[in-house]
Image 1: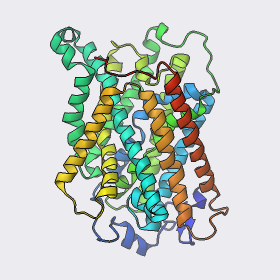
Image 2 (image 1 turned 180 degrees about the vertical axis):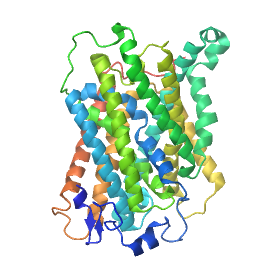
Image 3 (image 1 turned 60 degrees about the vertical axis):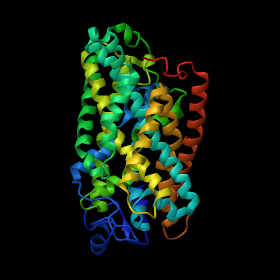
Length: 457
């Protein structure tokens, strides 16, 4: 696929050295050292993040909430198909992220909304805003649900005597824990305007994810055998839930909706530097995802739950530490999605207005409040991951980037050069339709998928 990303003889992205760069030296000096708004010549994002900071931000964006559902995705698709899908979709995400960055250079646009509007007009902007907002909102809501699913159990396990008191039951309740962490942690971080300032929290999130993977590997063989897969239970190599699994895997990997901000936060946002960040982040995310997906499924097989941490007992110390770190990971990832949702609103409603701190605070407050309500009332993480991944992530990652490239490139729109892009678009529409329909059907007919959180303490 790499060899097909070229434009008018000037753009060839296969080689990553200076001689094979997508732009000449003049273009690199004039267009890629800084990210500017085309009309005002002012920076869209405050560039200042180092390569390492951008790596942590992108890795954190890729390895997010969906990673704990990957063992369940393998259970749905089968071992061989599931592993292959993780590898293939990771490579596809790597490619479409680079296509998206190239589209930015070809169009001169530095936001996803601006790119799509440049290519497809107002209709494209509205469609992109809907799916991008849904992706960011679904991510924010999923992170809050994870906090509610993990921390109350951890607190009760760590302080059982306190949990028996009336005060403890209130403070350790799901509603109070969610409200406390959103209001006092996620919300203040969401008020940042520059994604580069979140690099330290993103670095913590990456370290926390490594700890979670290690805890699953260590504790899996040590828990009660009755909680693990039954002796002699088969490893299913292929299963019928392929498209539901694709939705979960897509949600786990897709970060296109906030890639522009990470790109723009680079100190020198050249394509070569950004592509290096993409490659390293994708490789790390793929390895981490394969480890937790394979190990988690092998341990539990037919008993694998949508959240792999829920397969472990409540009183397991190391797993409780992992649950705590994962909850904190979600709190530090939450602001990344808030930045995206806020930018969608600004582009749609306030694009020609000067920045207003009052509007910034009000928008952030409303977004966090709405997601807080969803997190307090929805318990099923699996439904959120499947719907968000199948509906929004597939559109943003597999349909729009190649479609914009076909629109921007010179020459015939249907040629050998654009065949990979057309195939990616067809794949994206297939996943979006089938995964969404099957996920809704699963939510309707499955007793496990139904229910409210109002009865959960």
